[in-house]
Length: 174
Image 1 (cartoon, helix red, strand yellow):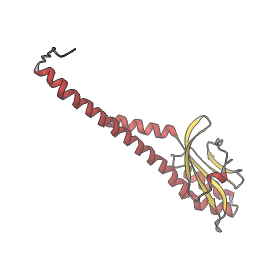
Image 2 (cartoon, rainbow, N blue to C red):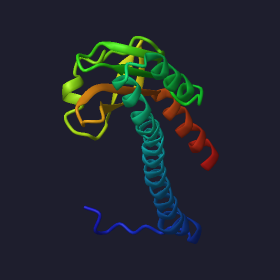
Image 3 (cartoon, rainbow, N blue to C red):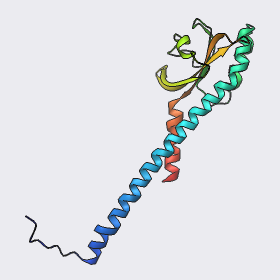
Image 4 (cartoon, helix red, strand yellow):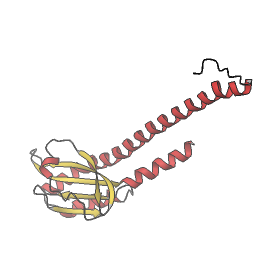
């Protein structure tokens, strides 16, 4: 069908078609995948911030819970909440009853699945919705001095914080 057709392009057209266009497409693909990777790294770092706060609170809150010092629990949560990077922090007893809360006071999970979330000694993070806002929640099991589970700590950060920071970085890199 195209056997007899000959295309005579100028040097400028050949340069655009065979050099510049592939170069631009390659740069665009590299930029896209680079930004995607960077966004994933940033999101993971921001999740890690929440996890570090949760792990840092674990021991003082566990101790206060064991000794039934509820005022100390509230002080610990309030001091961490003042950092300004968290949306909320909540402590539940073994039955899932909320003992203390700072920030948004109506988390959707309500500690209903304390046993499921604290099967291991490690924390567990997930995205969920609190008061109509998407948040990243990190759940940390609490244990007494004998190693028995005595509660759950939930620390949250708004997803919009993560998305907003990624947008800022995206604008700065372009």
